[in-house]
Image (cartoon, rainbow, N blue to C red):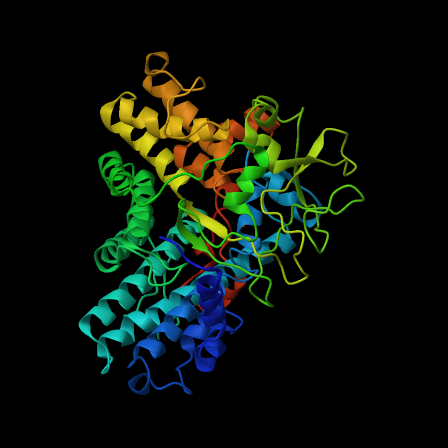
Length: 493
């Protein structure tokens, strides 16, 4: 679908014009305090009655998760420090030591928690009140509820993978301050329920660029099923997205062509399934820890903190990466940051015109590349061996990486006869690591696959402490949620 620059600007400006009463609720210092408050300036019987009112309420769901406490900075930064291919320095250094977090980073994951639960609260408000809207059609209600549930599922999915058991706050108990942690299986039950409702209620195409579709819901379901080891359902959902022919990989011929996917001036692409949208306006820019401006390089306007880096020689993941792969050239630039001549910084999300409020690059939660690699894995697991269909999903990613047309057989294609099930899965995992580098996805993949400790020991020669497998429940929750006791804290904190 073709869209204009005006479309995305309109959506981004709309996101900024959130109803004041809802924004005030979102800005409370702790999730539990927010939950104790009753909306005073915004009576539900006088709101949620028209499409513009409901759209404003839905926009408020996006607000907290898109801030620097969410996906624009802290959330991907914490995850990237734990990936096998990279390291953190400065105040982020303890993240890469895998022995637990210091107070600075405990605070960082705490504000991520608060932001995520504020997103969930705003979704709960929509889910609770939209069915009562007097000026809405049934289709208006279905669409609004589906979008709210998609975002709630997405957020709980992030929470359960990083914290394990968490309090389940829904429209049914959102005025209750004291909510105990629910078992992981129960959290997944809600996530799955919401994602299936989103699949049923969302449209074939986004109502505006940056909003989810039923295909985004099917992609979310695919990853949920992978985490639940439901290979058949994951294979089925991913194949439905492929067969829809709604998406395609962006073709590249040079490493710089990857800017057509990740560049700050890109409105949307055929590869975009669900992204969080950003621009250079105050409070709406994406910030990155990975850049450093020098006399030679200026990939980020404000200069950057260069808190995340890797090494071309000492990190085996990077050293073994074929230099002919255009992704490698695209993502790295060589800067000696005092750690040796082979240290490199990431420039995947570069914006030379970025200001001190951030850059305009969008955050790719789900790309078609993600979906193809999900399919390759699920298809092989279902069949007990790689198949031609799963291999083609892998080969499309691999061809594009070397500058070949993604849908045409090439000299870099993998051959089915060369793989067993295990070697094929290892190749898919390797390819996904290269493809999604610096997108905040690698650590969660390694944990899901049960190989996180093994990989970190192998690549970095560090024994990962058990407590680093989950983040600590923040003090803002422990102190104000009387349903929690000290024994509810994750081990080691």
